Image (cartoon, rainbow, N blue to C red; front, side, top):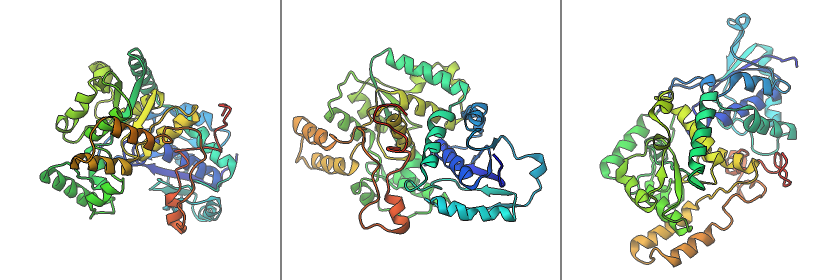
Length: 406
């Protein structure tokens, strides 16, 4: 394959609001569309987590390059002969289709190297050539394997969980950065809410500063609190003996907010409980590698439940769909907030009535086969693209056959 130039990309960490594996696969597809050599993406180390991990710390780099050699030419580093070559710095437009990238090829007329400093949501969810869509899936589900340390420990932890019986992987997005980013302060103290506001104000790349927390919550845009997750799981019929793996970073407020969930489900375990100190030592201070462990365990769980529909949750759901529509229960946060409001007012009690309402609400939210949702009626332009269901959340029908063969 003869390339027209070189494409460099900087991607943000797995633990941030866009998981790195999705961003990398979008860059692979872009490189194919513009017929460019892709330099293994650099990871943004300026995030909240201050993680120094490199691509090869998280992924099997040689295997990745080999698996995609028939699709895209990939190199580990920018060749020395191009170090001083003319280069451009370009922000590709979000949710762009194939025609946009046909025009983007003009960049290489004057520059041999193009650097993409921001790589989230670079591709449309729909309307792309079928070979590009399948390339995205081949990248994510086959080529992009984790590094040996992550794969090995992830496999051990899954085996330890399964030895106890079936287990839920709970992606509990109740970390400080998530609450600050979304502006969700329900149930927090005034000082905690102020701390989050200050964090949001000081984080320059978070563009929205003034957020009405009440409106966010009523609109279903806030992650469920740990206590609400406990009530939801009980209403869905999960018993006190259920094993739950906590796929999460440090929970904001710690036991102050986790105690109720733990009282509902005492068999709630984390990697710190399942793994030895020696096994976790190599991952210390590397949040992206720890998040990769969570991703692997979540994909392999018997049931996956996210408390917020962030992009890691979407990626895990899509991966589970690809592997045979493994059960993923997606909480209807907007509907649940209404029910929890009735509980607070004393107009509804925990028990059979609540359980009936919650189970009916989630009858069709458990990962059954279906086509990807299109945009919301009446939406136009960029807003239309924003409201489409993520390709990575549900790669059906392009990458999934109902026979189970992909």
